[in-house]
Length: 85
Image (cartoon, one colour):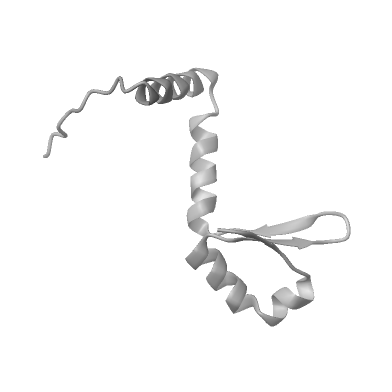
C-alpha cells in the first residue's frame, strides 16, 4: 500500500497500470491539478470509507463503537454462536 503522485499526462499514458496498482496493491494515486487535485482509490476502499463515515455519523453510534473497541482491547469479549436459519 503506497501513495503515488503523478501528472495527468503520465496517468493518461499508463492508466491501466495505475488502476492495477490501485486495485491489486491498495495504492492511492494523487493527480494534482492547478487549484485542487484528484485521488484515485479502489471501489473497495471507497466503500469502506463511506461505511465508516455512516457508522460514525451520529454521536451515539460513534460512542457505542468506541466503547466496543475499548472493551475488545481489554479482552472483555463474549463469544456467541450465530443462529442459522
